[in-house]
Length: 302
Image 1 (cartoon, rainbow, N blue to C red):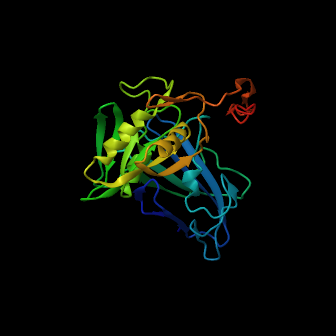
Image 2: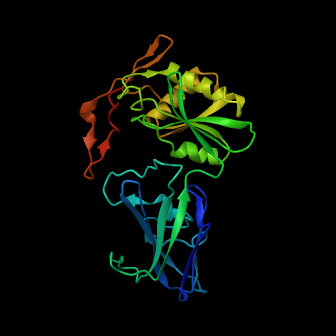
Image 3: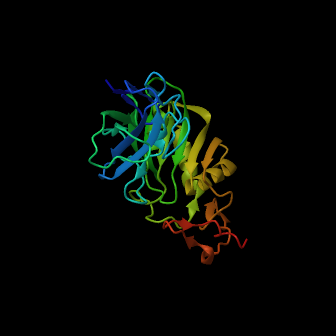
């Protein structure tokens, strides 16, 4: 009898899950699919082909995907390769506390040349729960001075390292990474910097004093291990994170993802000192055949 298992069946979103199929014919080729719906009902899915070993087993920790959304040995490939059914839809968890993602895993017979249609019944399937917060982690809405965000604190007495998490150009409050950081032992502040409560709806300048205020707020928390904090940031947030590391002595570690190494598009201000953005050439921006905005040439004239 064919069996499909995922261990643990309930896990954090960034935990390693061991996926295994047994009871197959030796060297049989099968197709594994993963699918989930986000809180707005948008469907995300992925698939990969695998060949069973001489014992009729496929173990994703060791087996090499033959094709599909990825190739090679990727134990969590079915998760990181999830793609939207509707183009440009972002997989973003909003309610990190109350509603874990439910991921359906399915195993199909396959001759390696045909993807099963929507009506093809799987040989076996299961539901895997992926959470964004560990038991005992607490969430506190932050409205302290000018600072707006959400603070996640791990269970226990502490002290714990403190981290500010910044997302990209939209600047809204995004909590999914901060909640996972707290689940792994950090006091994590998901920091909004526009389009949240009474913050400006659009970012017209970066005021580093706001981020300095947020840094000092986090350092004052009784469970935070001083004397400094880290910043984990992406895109526009990473540009800000780099400036925080330069100007704020309280920031002692940074992780910067997909960021420019200069001030881009809007000025930065810190205690009256203005850093103007690098001049840009919007006439060089193009749209790809897939509908993506390509910005590689935006600053090419400088």
